Amino acid sequence: MRIGELAEQAGVSVRALRYYEEQGLLTAERSSSGQRHYAEAAAERVRLIQMLYGAGLTSRTIAGLLPCVDAQVSTPESRALLAAERDRINAQITELTKTRDRLDAVIEASTAPENGCVVAHAPHGLAAATGI
Image (tube, rainbow, N blue to C red; front, side, top):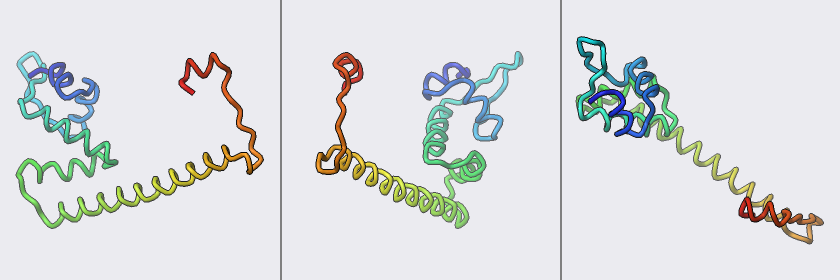
């Protein structure tokens, strides 16, 4: 499939696909005219790359993991890398949960009349436009 088709199928931009190639995360065959052609499995690979980026992994880390994915081999090194990334994500989740809890407390305190906080209401037109 051509680059535009892959971009549409995987839900990413053509620019993202070119970047993945530059980073060694995705490969394409080239036609005699230089056009990129991807295997059918490329869309699933792009979705995996997107998921790993979404989890906060760097392109270098992803590049280190993809050979294990391709070979369907789990090595002690790849398991250690995955475990370290999982631990990093868990730490982020813990911090985000604390931040959310602090925001909830501020919201609660800011709407409690006994705290001396005056609750202002949005003008009618603004409330209708923003859903406030």
